[in-house]
Image (cartoon, rainbow, N blue to C red; front, side, top):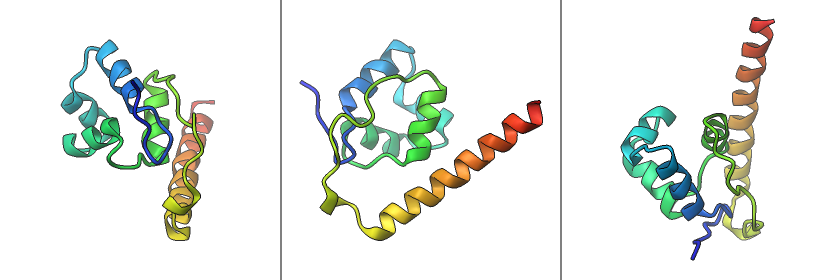
Length: 103
């Protein structure tokens, strides 16, 4: 059975994908720039996954669910939402700049 975090990500799908890449939690955590305890918490659904981590996972080929269930509106504070939006904006801005440099 799949567990669902507050973010709505089916963490067992993430674990299944990671195992299909033949990577350990430690290896994937290093690739993502996270420590292994933090990554493990994402897989278990014990900690919400920041949007930039999900974006990095997508770049690595993760195509599993990301928003199967809407998060509980009470689970996010306004500050959490603003921080996540700012981080996502900054991350996407960096990617946009990288794409423009390749042209």
